[in-house]
Amino acid sequence: MTALTRRGHEVHLATVHGGKPMDGTVHYLPIFGLGKAGYFAAIPALRKVVKRLKPDVVHAHYLSSYGFLTAAAKVSSFVGTAWGSDVLITPQQSQIARILTSYGIKRAAAITVVAEHMSPAVLKLGAVKERLHVIPFGVDTSIFQFRTAPFDTDFIRIVSTRNLKPIYDIPTVLRAVNILKERGVLKRFHLDLAGSGELKEELEVLAEKLGIKEEVTFHGRVEQLKAAELLARADLFVSSALSDGNNISLNEAMACGSIPVGTDIPANSAWITHGVNGFLYSSGKPDALAASLEMALGKRDLWPAIAKQNRDQVTKEASWDLCVDKTCALYEQLAGKRDEP
Image (tube, helix red, strand yellow):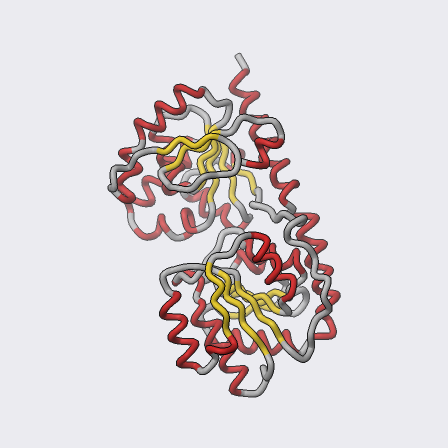
């Protein structure tokens, strides 16, 4: 919203969630405490907002919720963006979820996915190939700046910026680090966990049980500047997600020059070639993560070159400004079609 406002556009946000953006106008849609069923209750309110504002473009983020809501509100032409779980996981959980997600997808004038590997799932749910676009969220490289400090070969700092939720599998990270500590591979090290979630207390107990409590810091949810600081001073970045759309956390780590180690899922393998510019491991397996971390530690002489290569790749393919440019171009294309007689 801030980027679009700064480019001279009038931006409005219609949402069932809380929060206050820096720029633009917010319209809260009532859900009357109904939880997920509240999206049905919000349909008339969204319809009124759209009728009053007459926007050139409506952009629905997250297809299993706002995509359905926008379509159900009879918005004639809108962009829908898939984030990840909304098309990769939720439609597989129930027939109803699949129908609602597909309903929004089929009625969108354009669909964007944040990573190429998501395209087959969206097409399977009814998207038209000609209306499908791949646009990552993008990394603000002016915030996520390249590291200035040299890599420390004596004290190893590892960081994860994923939330403390089941899908991000942080227990595997703790167990893998403990394996390397017990084997003497990691002697002096620290693990920074930046993220929030319902598993925090459970993970704190696990860290204490494993005997690595003193080497782990739970930072909670952090703002971009703090995340950038943690990434720029880290030697290794771990992304342990079991499923992902475009792994923006990975892109941020690459932009900062932290050496990435991630699960061998499409969201990571699209950016990491194992043993070349990062390291991959079989998800959910502490031994496998420990092996990849040890492999990374064994190639410390290559870290400076890997860091520079990754920074260049993100700048070229997934910078924030580039992705905003692509999004605005799509908006202009759709707005132009609406103006055609």
